[in-house]
Image (cartoon, rainbow, N blue to C red):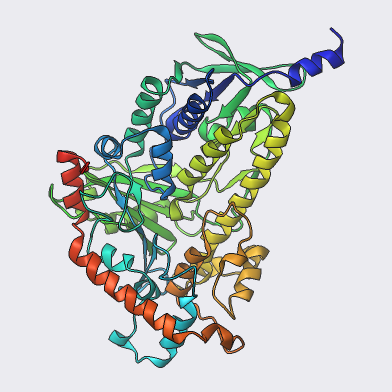
Length: 531
């Protein structure tokens, strides 16, 4: 067979087997999405093989999700009751940012998961800002999120996003989850192998075997020989065994924009078995970074992420100990390096990276798992039928995720540039214009005169919508000047109706919803009602 006919044969090769190298949440979510989607869409199905080393421990962090996780679980055919029971999951309705603006005790704001009231019909931010200038200080003034949506009030009282009689995955208030990442990986593994037909190979990959066109033909394993496929998904974590080491795709650091490079993580038991469970992630600003506090059913996940250029490890451990209290004695504190950035491309030849092998950023706003979900979804829905079209899909995938990574970096940086803290050069260095991406500078210039709007984000690949930017901007005290755009304030009657409607929704939600702990206890005991 001559070279051209051999190439044509390779191009016409059908995608029959996808080999996922690496387990964890990234590996099992990707394998599950592929198996579930193609099992449902095809009579012949797709062979999905996951090769996982028995000798590499999971990172064990990444406990926050986005509401997209609900549709992911539905796509995998997973019961919400089973998921909550087996993964120590709780409900997350957004994030509370404490001590980010000026570091004082009463300094906090919310980034909820509910859109501002009437968001598709009116920009309440303009009217709220106008009211702020007229109202007296103190109790007369309400936070932006509290004035335009009911979820801050729900979170402040520790309430759940629905009741036991709400259907699985249904809601009264939009929600995501907090989960035990280790338990979730095990849960996914069991579901994928027993329900979706994913073949699990527990073995070490010793080498990568290439074919004539530079594609990966197979991976060699220590005990199971060569495992061949038409598409390989790199879920090998920070080592990036396929995309990074084999294909030598460069890593693009963003350490000049986001300074966090170290995490100290600890699992903290509750004081009592009926201790309240926060309905949101708590992110508390510290001298050289911030502390996450995530409430699961049986424990809290707490961690201090900081910049080693602005704090020693000894200082960081003291900050974490001060936050956790005396109960930190006897608990194991894990140190985790954070290398902020991503690969210059994510799909090379017949290899695509998902999860840490593609990149990683600090866990602010829980972007890690949502990127895994979005990657797995796009791979499964746009799986190339043959090698001939794979490069087209790869180009589209790379463009999509380069855009998403850059937008997430912009959004995370936004939290830092608006702070007024001066207690450590960490905060002042973050406000240095040379560290702010031009794309974010351009948006900030626009937003001097109006609020973030959907037309600022023209792609259908946005992770954070305009409403998210509004919550952060106005939560941190940013002021948009509407003097040059009075037409954006010409519907006060409708705006006041929306403010009044939001007050009513707060009253209804606060009176009707159980606490997070009460609902989770009922789910564990009874499951969701099928009535």
